[in-house]
Image 1 (cartoon, one colour):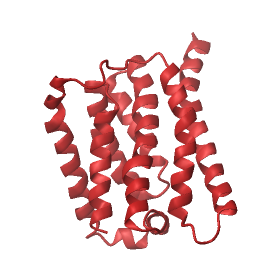
Image 2: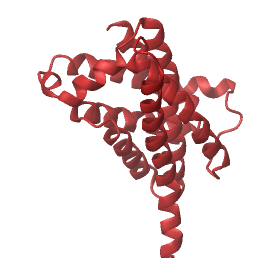
Image 3: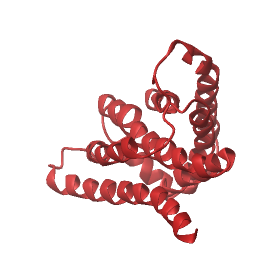
Image 4: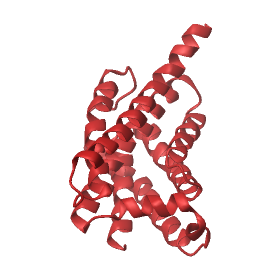
Length: 212
């Protein structure tokens, strides 16, 4: 029984390790190889693309509940939940901008410097399309998808949201990502469709990019 439980824990943790190691190593390699004219965000975007490949292969092979077909007419019923999540994310961003704590967090300042270090096109490609897909693939589809098979779904959502928050590595983004992780997780466990939390995540990030 202990070995079986350890195997379950490992199944959740090893994709996170693949993500963390590959993402960071690829980012450093691209930063070293590409000329100075390429931004940190561009390097991050390329790293995300590289990291998506093995994580998607892991996701496809995992015996988790995947809704099929992925798109159907009844999906309009999810629009209220998706829209509510998007509006909540936007409100949190607007609200957080008024708090002085964001100006005292060095980690948040460094993250913002990277995420807004290129033109609008690259920012949209990276922050709206590619990085949100990578994050939803890992935290919702792989981590939450597995946890929700073994433990209470609400607890699974909270744990996956904690992972999502912790891997932003600063207190400001942790709080924001944790709250958003819960909302995105609730969408995923209800519908089991990756594109739904991804769409919500992408729309919130699009607002942030456009108003930057």
